[in-house]
Image 1 (cartoon, helix red, strand yellow):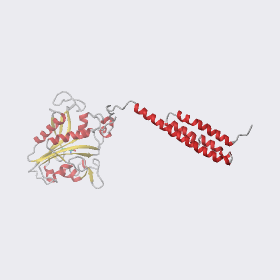
Image 2: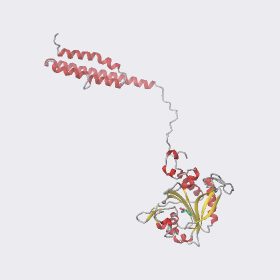
Image 3: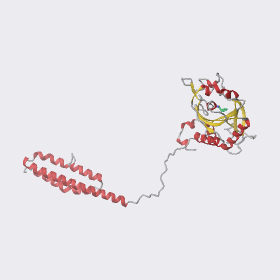
Image 4: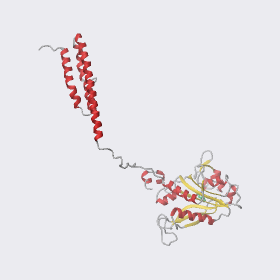
Amino acid sequence: MAETNPTDTIETALANLRDSFLPRFRAADTEQALRDENAKILGKKGELTAILKQLGRAPAESRKAIGEKVNAFKQEVEAGFGSCLKNLQRLEREAELSAPPFDLTLPGRAPVLAGHKHPVAMVREDVVAIFRQLGFAVFDGPEIEHEENNFTRLGFPPDHPATDMQDSFWTTSGKLLRTHTSNIQIRAMTTIEPPMAFIAPGTVYRRDDDATHSPQFHQIEAFLVDRNVTLAHLKGVLAEFAERLYGPGTPVRLRPSYFPFVEPGAEVDIGCVFCKQANQTRAGCNICKHTGWIEILGCGLIHPVVFENCGIDPEQWSGFALGMGLERIAMLRYGIPNIKLLFENDPRMLAQF
Ligand code: PHE
C-alpha cells in the first residue's frame, strides 16, 4: 500500500471539516449548543488543532499553502458561527414577542413576613395618647441616673432594700440604671416651675427575673403639680384613664399602699377585664386569682418632703403621681402568660397582635 502523503491527509481532513461544520452549526438549537459546537472545531483541543498537529510532517514547501487554507477556513467558520448566532437570537426574540403578554393588572404578591408593632409599643402609644388627651405633656430622661434623683430626693432612706446592690444595677462610678421612671419627677421639679402636668414613658431596670418580672422593663409615670390638688383629682384621672384604656364602666378601686415619695400612697385595681366579676360575690378567674380585681399601678399624693427636696413649697403646691408597668398592662390586655414572650420577639408571637 502506497504511503499516504501528509499534505493530502491534512487537506482531506480540512475539506471534510469544511463540508460538515455548517450543518453542525445549523443543528444547534440553543446559543449554548452553538457555542459548544464552535469550540469543538476551533477550540484549543478542537478538531482543527488536531489536524494542524500533523503539519510538521508535511514538506516545508507545502506548509505555506496549507496555512493559507487554514486561515481561510477559520474565517469561514467564524462567519458561519456569527450568522447562526444571529439567527438563534432572532428566533428567541420572536418567541418572546409572540408569547402571551404580561398581565399588568394582576395584583402584586405581598411579602410573607410583614413587620409588626410590638405589643408593649402598642400599649405605650395608647397610654401616651390618653394622657395627652387629658392635657399631660410628655417628658424624657436618662436611663443611667444619679442615686440622688432615683432614690434620695424621692425620700428613700439610705438603707432601703431597693438601694441595695442585690436589687439594682449600679455602675462603677456610683450611678445606677434607674429602677423606675419616678426619677423624672425630681428632674422636672428641679428644672421647671409649677404648675406642671406630664407623663414620662421609659425603660427601667431591676434585678428581678421570673415569669412576670424581667430585669429590663418599661414604665409610664404620670405627674401633676398645681394648687389644691387632692386625692379626688387623682381618682378622677384614674377613672378616666381606666375607661379610655379598658372601656366604659371599668371599675377602679384604690388600696392603701406604701411608696416613700407619696402620702397617702395607694395601689390601683381595675375590675378584672377577663371575668368582669368586680363587686360581685361570685368567684372570678385564674388571672385575677378569684378576686375579681387586677392591680395595674401605684400612685399617691406627692410627699411634702419630696417637694422640699426639690425647692418647692408644700404649703403652696400639691400634686399626685402614678406609675405603671407597660409589660404588665400588655400581658393583661393580650392574655400573655409569660413576660419572656415579650422580650424574645419571636415573629410568630408578634404576628398575633
Ligand atoms: N415608682 C413606683 C414603682 O416603680 C410606682 C409609683 C409611681 C408609685 C408614682 C407611686 C407614684 O413601683
